[in-house]
Amino acid sequence: IRVNFTWYDAFDQGMLFLGKMKKTMSSGDYERMCVLFNIGALMSQIASAQNTGTDDGLKNAAKYLQQAAGAFTHIKESMAPAFQQVVTPDLSLEMLGTLSAVMVAQAQEAILLKSVQDKMKDAIIAKLSMQASDLYSEAMKQAQNPHFGDLLPKEWIPTLAGKQAMYHAQAEYHMSLLAKKNKSIGEELARLKHALELAKTASSRAGSAMDLKDFTGKVQRAHDEADKDNNFIYHDRVPELNTLAAIGRAAVAKALPVSKPMNAKFTDLFEKLVPLAVHQALTGYEARKADIVNREVGRLREATQLMNSVLASLTLPAAIED
Image (cartoon, rainbow, N blue to C red; front, side, top):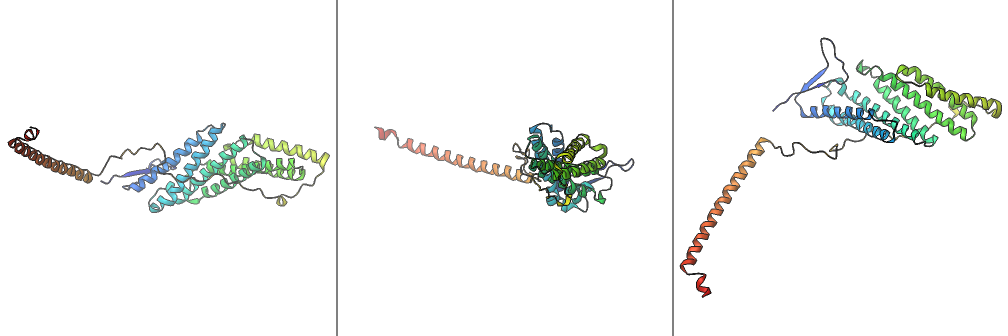
């Protein structure tokens, strides 16, 4: 039985007369690929619905985003290559790679936010921030693929670009706090100056997609205070940015492999469903088995009756008992 499955492009908004891009195929593998795409999208939606102001919310967000990244990566590496000549743009290898990169970047961001919430050391937060910046940079590059055209929502690129600069700024800010603790006022000023520049860049890139006024204000106040203290007290030389030690990276988030089954409570709805040919063969087997058993039982009863009649003619077992 050939059953057609129709998939509509996830990002195409459609045109007035042409409608949305779609592809219809009678392929179980194609349908499984599309279903897994929807599972990845659903996981990202569940992640976005989490309360990131709580510890559990951030943990769940990071988990679901990494699982979503794993779903898109699995499709890209193991399923989509067989259909690249016929798929809609959302299932292209380039788009799947972009979606996976965006999910991993957001997962790293959730882990970073939890580290800030847990008040971890500034060095750790700086490394997590720098890794988040790198991941958003990679996601932004992939999202700018000219083949995508206008498919992606218009706010994606500004948001990705803004977060790349913002988390770089956050990394510099926390490194400035570390320098302040070490009484390296010149380095503190240099990093705060760079953080302020990056924060302003992030704000201009993101536009209305992100509100960075609080963060920019915090960095500005820290810079002004440090500059004032240095001018009146320390008189420390402010080094050039390229002479400062590079900020390390802490890569924590990654695409999680797709597990089978994906849910520990999974129940196969078709566990007892077998092909018609197998069902017919099983029915025939049961009928033949019942026939053989009935014949053997009949022969056994006849033999039992014969034995009883012979014993009765010999007055057994009564003769033995006497």
